Length: 525
Ligand SMILES: Cc1cc2nc3c(=O)[nH]c(=O)nc-3n(C[C@H](O)[C@H](O)[C@H](O)COP(=O)(O)OP(=O)(O)OC[C@H]3O[C@@H](n4cnc5c(N)ncnc54)[C@H](O)[C@@H]3O)c2cc1C
Ligand code: SF4
Image (cartoon, rainbow, N blue to C red; front, side, top):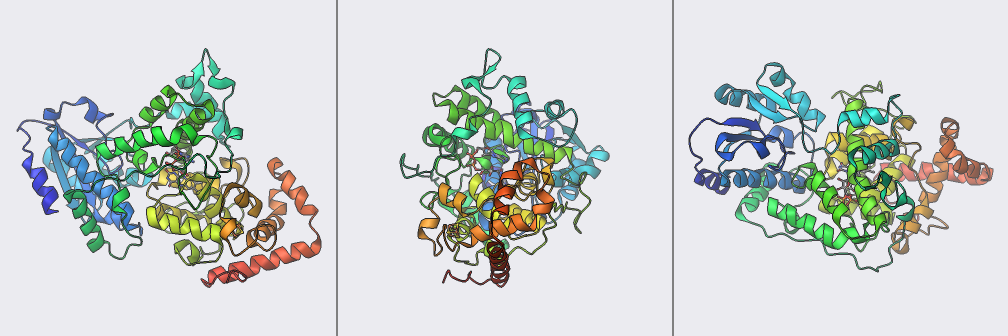
């Protein structure tokens, strides 16, 4: 703390009356909101480092280091432009810390927090007039866009929302028509990656004393949290974040579309931007990335594919989360901490130790798990079609899986992780926000990745994922019968001989048993 505090103290903002703004850990920008409008000499910011928040779940060390390093560099960046910075370090919650500050400086402004969890923490202060909440200007769309696209309410559909906002915002529209002649180029974005074009090298960043100090703090104070800190790949300043986006534009976006669904042991991100941790703390602004992507010379399938992620999926999941109060409004189940616990299929098995790093011999699972514990990153398909898919096929409790994703990934916040895992990855809320469950067998994983090549199992013969998939179809045949998008796989299930179906059920029993014990799957040794 010494270096950081000394550097902060070295900036002596001129005395005078200031408007104080609370800047939460995920609003680290002066490019939108009150910080973009109030003159630095009239502005003061309150930054809270709460070890209670950091200890709320066992977030890996690199995630804690990422957030803290950005928070502290943001303080210094603001102080350097003449903003008064009140940095509060506390073991208490945000409300307690901010109540003390407000007593001193008067009511503080705050952009409405993106996280439900923080909004809830701040309710008493908003009620008492100590926090004046203003609109969060980091989003690209408003609640009215979502409501207009779903006039009849649920079920919610991303394509309806996306179609509406493309028209309403004019993004990728030409003379009132969708650029390239259609809304989505998703069908063209499913190529397997065979090494050409070469995957870009992920950028590295120079460390400084402030970041080093954060690393020491995390190593010491959160020693029992999992993972390590990959300092080389940790963007900590605004300049790092800008460099990361420049890299993504140059190296990733031109090939983003075709290889969007591909996975490889040679590159964990391939042509994905790796921007989500930075976007989710506003170091990189969604508006800038969409504007820049639209202005770039690149194939429409890549351009639209990228825009769909940021303007479409990212905004959609956040609206679904808010419209359903984090699914509490639409499901009855809640756990002791008031978290929503939907499970449309009734899955409730414990998450096997494999997700915490115990080897299974299933290369797809082991590779994706080891990658996320190393870096806190994994792209969409490894999350959806490996980690969530396998947990679903194994009947893991959707809530437990969500809490794992929330802990393991560096970009996880309630508004984004809950819809993606409960809504999309596990079908825990039925067809509330997707039309079908995202489950797949070994043929999909083999088709989109190189995992199977070095695996102890053969995807066409003895791979357990094949049987797990059919056993899952068998168990939930009744429950899924009315879903029109499941009719093809359910027809295929009917063609499976009784002996094969019995064998599938047997594999399910053996694999769940082995994984629950933390053992490798028989046949992998
Ligand atoms: C089971 C599961 C859990 C997920 N958990 C999270 C999470 O905790 N935090 C998170 O930010 N994303 C989450 N996602 C969405 C998505 O996988 C990540 O945003 C993406 O992989 C981040 O990598 P990237 O920055 O390289 O993305 P790119 O592929 O380069 O996409 C660009 C940006 O689009 C946005 N985006 C794309 N898809 C989604 C989506 N479904 N929801 C929200 N934003 C999206 C992200 O901001 C991303 O940075 C999850 C997806 C699944 C299936
Ligand atoms: S063979 Fe089966 S278990 Fe092995 S990597 Fe492929 S899908 Fe996964």
